[in-house]
Image (tube, rainbow, N blue to C red; front, side, top):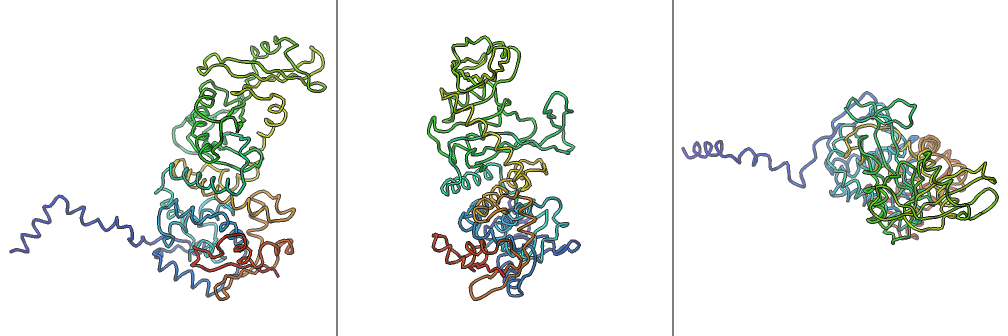
Length: 488
């Protein structure tokens, strides 16, 4: 009777349904099995708990590995120097033994390989790729989607900030001149969204937007933000500059930001002048009223610089501006009044117009060079339009780019000048080799490396080299093994 009464009370209790599922929220709960790809046709659901992962990785290492993706292991030393593993564990917020940081590392290395499309068609397994990530398998699209879906845009931006601070400490940024530019990719989504038209003659099309900030002196990306096609440059630039400010920590007047005509809006100029430590330089739209206005400037206001070039600087107030007057920089080319051509720029600070117009502003085009060299890492296709997933994936590609930049400093010509896609095909997929264990060291042997003598100087006796630089040579995602490399 007591048992029946207890069962009746439990069934009628309003909290019983929730109490039955409390186990799902335990922090040490065993992860659910993951869907993985063994081959192009074979899909498996495998255990993803730490013990099963370690057992599988150690078995693969004991069996030895041979393949043409072992070139990616050249990035391991750059990860150790950069602190990639600590970044990924902090982003995921879980213990290093868990599967999630390893899935993030898989995304980093997929970006380095410049692979896109469905993972089942890539066949990256059984070539040393999965072991590099501390996994005995290659996770499927669903597993990766679940990983990225669990994170917010703010968490991805926090990862960018931590990465940027590490890169700043390693001297990747000069922090004197920044270039900002939107990177728009055609989207074939069926969603309803505003369309973008780059000029007056082209047909509007759907886009996915990414806004980049680049250090124009070192040509390295500082940060980026992503947005839907409805967001304007005026709306997207303040968060981008706030993230760059958190990374670089500039003093007022220390850093100049150069942009294109699209950034010429009163609201944006007022924001930069009053709420950021940056100076902003943008070209003014080439309109007939502006051309007549500049042609009416007295000739004695121009300072001849060299044959065919003169400059002028004067206060300028925007019609809809609220932060006071700015400075108009005018560039005049031509030798006679009949051949004069004028180009106007607007600056939020009183600066030397000759240096800004002839030395600093032309460096803005380095952002286009950066897109050409690195967009294959994951910034050349729109993919999903879910902002948290898209921002997370592109942020992990930013981690890959940082490691590639470190790697380039150790590669001799011509490899160091290859773009990301060429580097992936020629180096990461182009090196045939094997991986085996010797005591506490993973030994990677390359048989057809280009410029082996130059590579030996950086990668042979790698544990001793890393220790001499103050970096721990043990691989935390591979259970404390060290890595050494040989060239034959």
